[in-house]
Every structure is written in structure tokens, then in C-alpha cells.
Image (cartoon, rainbow, N blue to C red; front, side):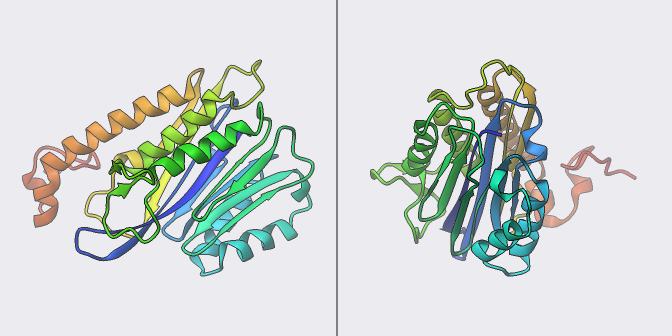
Amino acid sequence: MTFSICVREEYTDSDGTDQTRFGVAVTTRLPAVGTLCPFASESGAVATQSLVNVELGRKGIEYLDDGLAVEDALQALLNADEGASQRQLHGVDSEGTFVFSGDECKDWYGHIEGDSYTVAGNLLTGESVIEAVADEYEQSAPPRGAETSSAETRDGRDDDRPLAERLVDALSAGYAEGGDKREDLHVQSAALLVERTEEREMEPYYDDLRVDATETPIDDLRETYELASEGFEMAVERYEEAYDEDELDEAGDESPDGEATDE
């Protein structure tokens, strides 16, 4: 598998309550990466790759949900994994980060660990790929302890775009640097997943997206994001009042879940 990013962002919601959002995004020159590598919950985000062991991601998130620190959770899983030397595993929780690249991963491989994010990749054209991912994310990341729900970039510009959109940009930066070096593999994929501690009446449709088989994974993921964002805005316009009143049958023929409301 190729390269991925996990992030944690603190923000304050519209009610003035401190919240946290977690995101993970990944792309590779193989199909259906979204079924194997990215995992997230309101407790953290994890990516498992290289010679993939899906259980590292699944159990990693379960451990975080149980209250284990990300370093303890992921290291414990690696300690019990006979194939650990061929794995890449990284993630974030509410307080920390963890990154591991086994010494039998395929070149180029490596990782970056920031204050609130991690990036890792293998079978890349070079180190500049993950550096570009990290740099692009840092340009849009909110400062630690931000007091508003919008993100202010580190160069002082306002950036209130959703995390999902900014994760696509981070993948795009790595892809532009060469990404996965296996140019003979034309079937590619990409995925992103965002979870948050904040409870919302309507969860954004664009926070859980996959492009499973394409030759242009980043372009397709961006287009999917844009369409999902447009669809979410349309749904909010149509159903938000009904959600507030808990009376979806008065909002139209179908609920946001696509179920008929006149049964």
C-alpha cells in the first residue's frame, strides 16, 4: 500500500463546547484501499498498510474506544503480530500520536510524526511524497487550542474548509510528488474518513468516501467529495427543519436515509 495521513484537530462547536475531530485518508495503486487501511472513531484515527493486517486497524480503534492510549494500543498489537517487520501502522488519539514502519517494508518507505498528525508511506518514489503530504496538511491545520470551529492556517490565512476537503488536498500533494512508484499498476483507489466527538442531527455525507477502482484516484475522490458536499447542502436545506422538529414525514416524500416517510 502507498501513503496515508491521520490527523487530530481540536475546535469549539457552535454551542461553545470543546470538540475533537479525527481524520484519515489514503491512496494506493491497487483497488479498494478504503476497505483495508483507514479506520476512525470519535476516539482516534488509525491507518494500517504495507503488507496489510486489517486487524491492526480494527482492533486499534477498538482499543482506543476502550480508553487505551494510541501508543500503548498500537504497540501492543504490533508486539503480538509475527509479521510486524513488514507492517506500517500509525495513528492519533485525543492526546498523542504513534508511527511505526517495519524494517522489511519496501523502498521507499518512511514516516513523519507531527504534533497532531502522522504520515506514512511505502513503495514511494521518494521521501518528498510524505513531506508534501505533511506540508500541505500543515498549511490548512488549525493552531492547537483554536477557539473557533473554523481553521486558521499557520501563515495567518483563514481556512474554514471541512477536514475532508483538506485531506483530499494533502493526498493530492503527495500524488503530485510521484506517489506510489508502481506505474505499471493502473488500477488505483483512494479513501477518506472523518469522525468527531460532536453530535450532529445530520452527519455530513462527505466524511466517509471511497473511490475503489480508477486510474485517477485523487481527481475522482475530489469530485466525489464535491458531489457529496452538494448533496449534503441540499439535504440540510430540505430536512433540517424536520430534524429539529423530529417530524421527517412533513419534509417530503423521503427522509435523508432514502426511506419513504408515508408508511
